[in-house]
Amino acid sequence: MRRRLVNSSSVRSVGWSDGMLELEYVNGSIYQYDDVPQTTFAALLAAPSIGAYVNTHIKPYYDYREI
Image (cartoon, rainbow, N blue to C red; front, side):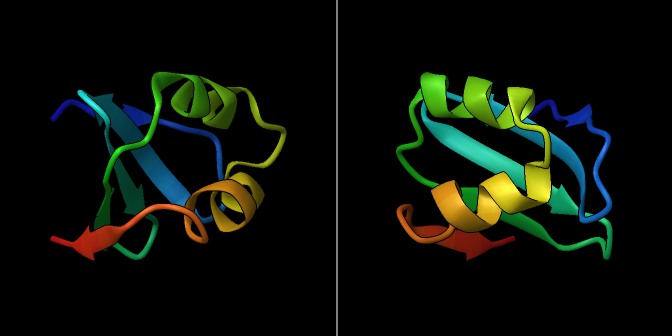
């Protein structure tokens, strides 16, 4: 999956494809979140704080795995 670099102190890059959201954190860990709508991905990219958006709108609601 292609990820794009983002301006965040906690997230290095983000990618989305067919409902799969992939986040690479600055510590090098990579997580995939299942069934994330494209609108949620767009809101993530537009958020003033990507890390805060992930913590409040992604982590509590979507199943994930570390890869």
